[in-house]
Length: 342
Image: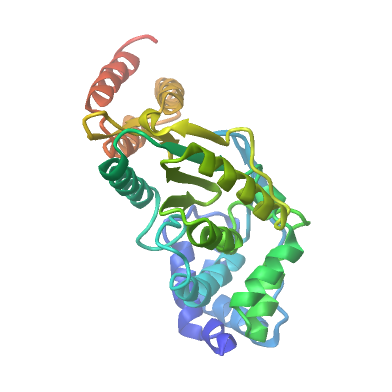
């Protein structure tokens, strides 16, 4: 039974160690960690008795790459979510999710998604050359628009154990409807499942072979523009059943122009060479960050070591594309910022 898995002491203690690893040692973490064994035992008892309740979220805003409201849960709730996700939700859903659903799963992620897009583009090119079209879709304020009752119906189809139903509903209703909390691990998994039916609809009923999705950002590649227009109408109708809509960024573009996906511009040259370059928006964003970080270094608010840790993390990301010249120009820009006046 799911209850035995989630309330198992070793699973909960492993979740505690995972929640603690690499996290800032804030007050809730410190409070729990000072009496870790007792804390895990208390959680175990609350989960067994079904008296466990979530603490209020800590809300804050982030502004990159765009303004978002993040809802961070308390440390004890992170422990429970790690245990639930790692031992119940993801092990079952990973067997259900399609290969081209890229987000929030072990062994997948942004690089995996970009490599899968590369495969789809090159396979399309082999058969159709540079002709064809790409439908690029993005859902309007996806997390903020998730209807709790619809999500519960979907989740209950895949997790029928009464204990998991109780815990899933507890997390879903931890915020007002509509909406799911960004920064909540269980919500990330629920969001993946919310659009699983759409994945099956597009690849099954619509017959699209070249398709991929990273959370609410997805693409369809097809040689016939008119058929993609029909697909778009059908997808919009499908999303209506979930109380979701596509935003203004949704468009059909020529295959030869490529697609912006996961921070890179992807395209295939007329000669059949796949190219992946950072988008202009990404370049502007890193320059803005570099200026901010360099000011922090000069004001003594950031060490040189921390500056280069952050910069090298960006370079590592850029290295996944055809960005040698860009990285070289950024190296010169960094020398200019750190070595002299801006």
